[in-house]
Image (cartoon, rainbow, N blue to C red; front, side):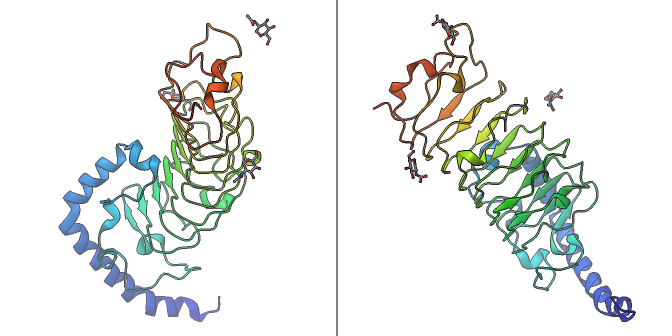
Length: 287
Ligand SMILES: *[C@@H]1O[C@H](CO)[C@@H](O)[C@H](O)[C@H]1NC(C)=O
Ligand SMILES: *[C@@H]1O[C@H](CO)[C@@H](O)[C@H](O)[C@H]1NC(C)=O
Ligand SMILES: *[C@@H]1O[C@H](CO)[C@@H](O)[C@H](O)[C@H]1NC(C)=O
């Protein structure tokens, strides 16, 4: 940076910030109530939508981009303030389908980050290092191949994380408070999922790992788990310890409501003792 930079910035940035502010104001003026309502609904988590990671047909972010984003094509290494590039609404940051390739620098006290359908390839530890307030991160539909080991592990309030529709082959360390984790549609292999990956997540209720290349169900699934989706993987066998506790007929896995193992090579009929503690049989092939 040379001495000219501040001057240049004030010549270019200030008028542009002003025009962006005016645009944003127009938008919020017209849509405040609607946005507040959608946001409210969105905050009350719709797990199906969040987790199944299907591109929602109607969405708070489906406003025409021209209304929100200033007339500037985002640059990959942009140093533009995040809230000009993205939409920031009390605690939520929406950076969807704007083709960013890195996680933007978040405003302080961000609780919800939606950065779906971009081109982010890599998550670095520093991306979320100073945001202990994050409760939900949605990175569905990016190109993420690599996540630095501790990138999510130190987020004490993080409850919902979606990494669906990316290119992951292994999982990072997950934070203890997680209730919803979605990694559907990746390239996960069993050797990339540590045997105790989910053990300490004592509030995890929804675990979505469908459409990967896993050849076994992860061990040590927490008691809190209600839904497990592992359809369309490469699972060939199940052990008596996967869901139950060996041959103990006293143990019941109380909370489990749904297990999907369809679309795997395993024939579930070969492992009758694996399900004795469940209140229902898994979906899958019994031939
Ligand atoms: C799980 O949730 C309960 C109730 O909301 C909370 O008291 C507890 O601290 C949570 N556990 C973890 C590991 O965060
Ligand atoms: C599925 O597993 C079999 C044997 O366990 C292996 O030969 C095959 O390559 C696997 N397929 C994929 C897509 O990983
Ligand atoms: C249950 O398993 C344990 C060890 O795996 C074995 O010692 C015990 O005999 C088994 N009990 C029954 C009733 O099969």
